[in-house]
Length: 621
Image (cartoon, rainbow, N blue to C red; front, side, top):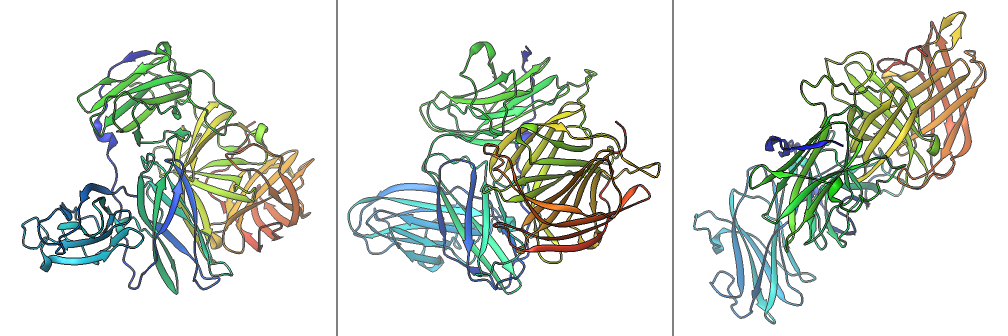
């Protein structure tokens, strides 16, 4: 086993990234707030917004989910003037960072007449004055809510109890960046990610999936954000409020910093990190957000789970637990060196009597100057024999890595996801190192693609022919061990056909094909869209001696299984035909003529003049 060693890790690695500003719409319709109850600190909610023109292209985006600032004070009724000093009111002066764009203030008291007031502290006395008032509202369903049109650097918020019994009043305010309402791909620092289909449905409704993770929500906590949906004829923003009812944790693979709330005595036993094969260093860092006594443990697991879900960590055992040591009053750190197993649980434990909030970060790699090397990932296609029917194609595309994952929605309908790394000019050729990629759900707007970030995916090679695929998708974590599919190339007229790889037509960028050819097999996955622009895949395959002739391949639609659920053998339905043409050892043209079946609506009829999206697999055995 590795040995424990204290080593300083820069606290700056726990910094977060601010959002980028989006141009404001000239006419944005603000809808009523939607409230959802959730059971976990990570997951997703499905939403619907009606009232759009059917068939129009859709673009969606979201803010972060933000925690409120909260004051609870018991107020007695009696003083009618809210601006008079009295036990009938509570107020707070607030200084607002210039990056914030929206302020929402609420006063809540069960069964009481409560008003909320907001104003700009223009005279600088840090108190409410009637001439400074910019917004007021009375209670509706015990909650008074106020959103001023404009905010300033210095403001005040106030709750006033007009009548009724003496009651505790909750005065809370939310601040968030409109800059997170983005028109382009969302940042991986955001704790909320939204995705939508490419077009409005026939009933004028736009379905949305809002996933959330890293919210640090504990039982009873609230988070508030907004989603924005735009079509050519309408733009709306809808506030979304999540309230958690539950205290357990979701299985989570750590792929960056994670903020966690722990109740007194609570242990997070479902947080883990993977060490790439060949690693000889693993490091965990914890930042205390408040002063509660929390310990951080690193605990190894000798074997990998079958997946896709991560099991809970084993019971704490002193012989197999490595405790982080203090760097200073705020940070604890543990660093281990040696031969490392692949799976490690990162376990914060709250030994205090109050709720604790911590930020946790962990990772593994190579100790400097050790001479060790990490394994690399072979380009090609991978699948899980124990969960057949889904898999990934991963190839280098110039200086970047491109991955396509054919999988299924929760109801088993086929879908696909796309991942691409940032360009790395130092890694333009050859196999791939351990890869950590943002994961996107695609939408087709009729003439172009839109990518919605929905998580991350990481590839950890085990051998030349196997890897672990770890992923965060829609606020959930999973992992599977995948096997390399096929190697080698077929021949045509004595020349090899090196066509295994990603192919696309630049005129229809956003759709395409992943191809696997072999002397005794041919497989083509078509990555296309249904009538509403939702991503779908179809497969065409043929065994026996490779035949490059014009004989079409049958296209099949697969009905499969939840990527986080138990495996079931996919049901295949013939839905059309695929024709392809090879020339000079490469794929040249692909034609698809298909009509979707089952609960998937639409068809896809195209002829694409294709080119490779980066490198092909090559013909090495």
